[in-house]
Image 1 (tube, rainbow, N blue to C red):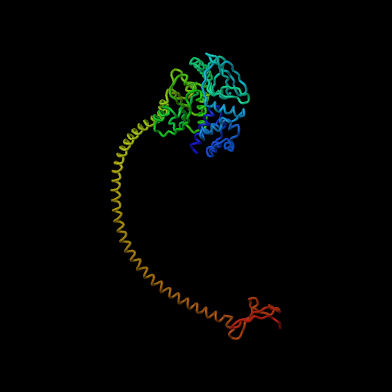
Image 2 (cartoon, rainbow, N blue to C red):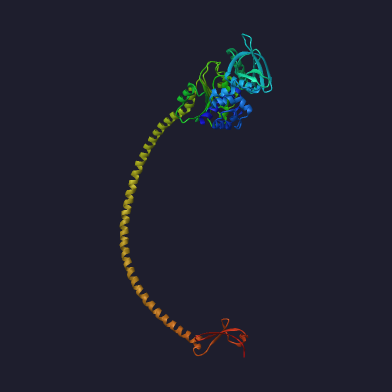
Length: 491
């Protein structure tokens, strides 16, 4: 599925390029994914896929079926002898067949008009009779950035087409370019003068190439020796290269280059690099396109152009922030600050080592001086502590004798304390005995043993009948217990 999807996406890009439209207008991503997954065999299968309607199938169905299935079988199903077409189907079939005749045609412009979002012109053969009616979308014409006039000799690139509503045959033009070095040089000089007057090529507006660039946006063709030379000569300094594959020759290259610049607008890069090998003045015309030149000049990040050229430097290179003669020279520019840094680091390393050795030598001398001073201090401290040791020993002997005397004194004091404590205890025992006798004498319960009792009301001793009332609850304490009762009568 992945391989088929990749093939379908490549086909879509080719169609978008030849028709001059965005990719999604050909077929949406989700539709391509569904086609790759389901691999439809017939028109009916295709019409079941989301995004494929009758009109879309009439335009691209045959090409898609060819990619997915056996071309011979498809052709027999679609173009068999017994097949009867409607006019719309037949013209659609012819236009699909015309896709194979994508061509470049040279001629002289004999008429020209702008109508709506398209231009219409005729080309006539400059040698023999013959006229070709041409049609071109205004958007594609703007990208070509040419002001065509009647009488100009041009080369147009595109394919035959029949306009279905009226059956008129014309040539659907994708790109248009001038013929002859003289005409190209005239257009080059005119555009260069215009851009110079605007200050677009001025040195003052050029951005500085950053020191130690890391993230590089690269625009060139994935085929050929140019990209190989670039990747071979770029230094091993940890560059992060984002690559956009683009045509770099012919008018079709303009659209690719514009898409590439648009892509890198949203990428995190330090510098944008555009490279291609050398070539004739005619082969470099894509880089003299006004739209492309302005896009390069307006790009936010610095742009380096390494486009091989002779005497007439491409205007895109003149508009870039730095132009060099070859792709290899671009790598020299990108490597230079890193190589300088490494050389500087080497110099700094040698300087640092020399400085370190000098400092180390000075510190070694200071250390030797310090060590001599420390040895004197240590000798003084040793003698001091030796004297202190003897003094301490003498004090310890003295303390030992004093501790012995203190122990004897403590022993004698303890004996005296014990004697005094025994006397105090005997005195206190006598005192407590007297207290006990007094308590026994005055103890209220003593009377209870003699036959008396104690009457309490709510925990208080009842001393008078005035304290009592009928129905009061009383507690009577006897020698061997208590009696609870109520007052029935007071006398």
